[in-house]
Length: 191
Image 1 (tube, rainbow, N blue to C red):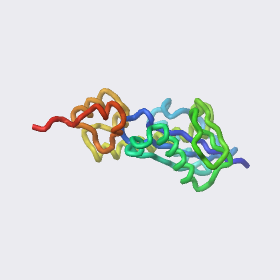
Image 2 (spheres, one colour; image 1 turned 45 degrees about the vertical axis):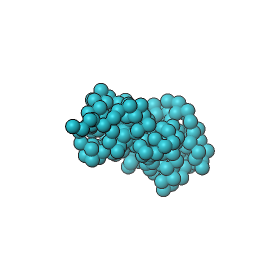
Image 3 (cartoon, rainbow, N blue to C red; image 1 turned 90 degrees about the vertical axis):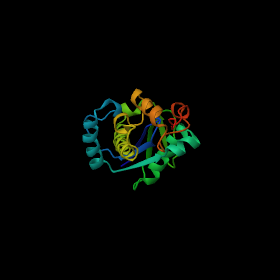
C-alpha cells in the first residue's frame, strides 16, 4: 500500500514569526470529511479537523524556519527549508510527496508540486490545516513574549493594527527585518 505525504506551509505573507510547514502521511484508508485549504475554515473547524488528522494519519510532522532564517535566505527558500525539515522529522517516510504550490523542495522522495493542491488533494489539505493550527499557536506564544503587538489577533500578517503597533513599538525580535514594513520602521524616539 503506497504512502502519500502532503506538504503545505503557512506564514509566507507575514512580517513576523516563523514560516511553518506540515507533512501528513496518509494511506488509502484515510478519509476525513470537510478537508480543504485552512484559510477557508474557521479556527474552531481547523482545530476539530486537526484532531481528526492527527488521529487518522499514518504520520505527521512540523518543520519551521525562523524569522532570522527568512531574513538570511529569503521567504521562498525558508518555505522550502521548512518543508524539508518536516520531511526529515517524519517517523515514517512516504512513497510519494505532494506539495502545494509550484515549487518542489529537494526531498529524497519522488513527488510533485500541485498548484491549488490545498483545496484538491486531501493529504495537502490536511497539511495545510496542521501547519495553520501549529503556527497560530506559535503566534500566541510570541504574543505572550512581546505583548502590545497583539500577535494573537493578526498572527503576524501586516494588518492595519499590526503596522500601527510596529510604528508604535518598533520591531520585536520576532519580526522579519528584511520585509519592507519592518525594515522601514524604526523604534520610537526616546525622550
